[in-house]
Length: 128
Length: 294
Image 1: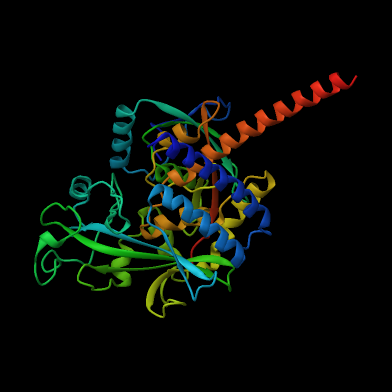
Image 2 (image 1 turned 90 degrees about the vertical axis):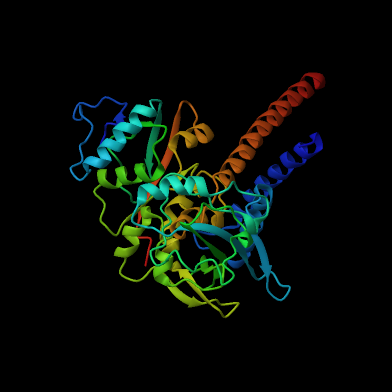
């Protein structure tokens, strides 16, 4: 996923650049740049793995408020290189899966504490 | 809202939280028994009434057995190829959610492309062709109205809730499986299509005996388990049915408002504050008692 909209807030020696994603289309990149322009405010998101899901090396991310849960989910899926038949779920408050169209900014307003939004993510072969 | 109304709401949510803690303690592992299913549904129902989200409980033979039910009218656009047009038109064509559950419309903001791949623009508004009879406010020409009905039943075989649903046009033509695929959120479409077994199947409704679509529950425990285990370790109360619904709902175009979660979150914060206050008071009382005894 294009990481013009997201960047790690933790400095890591082995990761000075946000990871690039070859599969992002040009249209998607443009859209994200546009979003980045119009929604300049970013929120801090802390991603926590649940169950057997791999833990992300970088857990803390600065995300544009306007970013959707779906977009974040796709990012994590690509980051973790999940299979096509593995579905990623994102949970807020460890008790609810927000709608894929939900903006992370709204989630931060409702559930953020200590200046960050904690989201749990979990992969599963949930269908069929 | 009146002062007494506000206080009433606060109390209700507080009671909800305490009840929820009880339900969580009842749960053994990550399988849901029928009694727990009933309790979770009643809690969801209480919240739904507060939020006017339109769920109702349909009891069977006056027993505790039954299911949750909700009907939603959804405006769907005929032209599925012009995604840009849909996004703009959808936001214009859907009126705000009204109080009556039957008249409630799904708000199709931003990129939720609820497209009707099998619809054609002519003939969809009844033989009378009278658009004045339509319940919702639509933009002219390009939208159609569908009635979706969602049922949440308990499956003994899988010890889990199951989502059944069906959809009709306003004239009563039922949608095919192909039509229904269009309401699956793109976030899930790719994965669902890749699943070895068909995740959405046509089944006979166990209680009504009518054909419905069903989201297969065989993997429900699998995706619920990790989150439930973490919650039970804390312990954090979780409404199994609400959590499950928030995951599967969007798959079949059913919106589960975030307010279900924020309402519980607020009540838990209130609870924490009052616990803290009461424990502070308790400590103070004990100290005072010790002093006076000496």
